[in-house]
Amino acid sequence: MQCGFGMRSHAVAGAFVAIFKRELGDAGFVEFAEAFGNHSIVLFLCGAGERQIEARHVDASWTALMRFECDRARAMLVAGKPLGRTLPGRVGLEIRATIEGGIMIADRITAASGDVFRHRPTLRKRDWAWILWRAAMKTGDRP
Image (cartoon, rainbow, N blue to C red; front, top):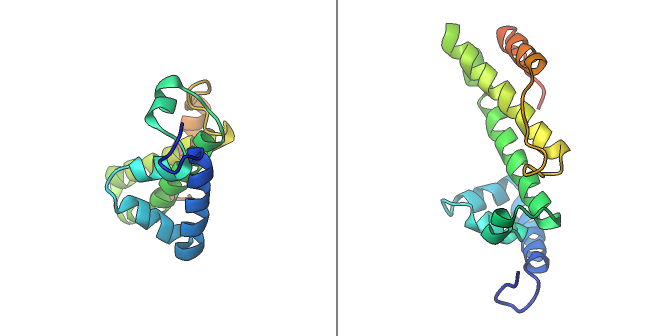
């Protein structure tokens, strides 16, 4: 995959990511990427593309993209934890369970180096039990 500069896109993307993260910090970089309203900027900055997704090709650029997206999703889930603790009854339980399940899936994707094509993240019965226990106990102070 080539970018408009005549260089491999992941080399250019890596330079952009390094510059943006240095200048904006991780949180600022996420805000910058989200400001575009879609993930095309994130795909570009990580060096991944739609053809790579269609081909189910996992390389360093895909792994970087998935790490970025899992970190971003995890941060949003953790930011929502106070809502789950505040809401009473079933709705609070459901929010807490959704957050715990989402974090567990993000952890599984990260553990598989982002290869969701060959290692689809799933939740087993014991995972559901753990999620429900943590949600019922209103625990979940882990990041």
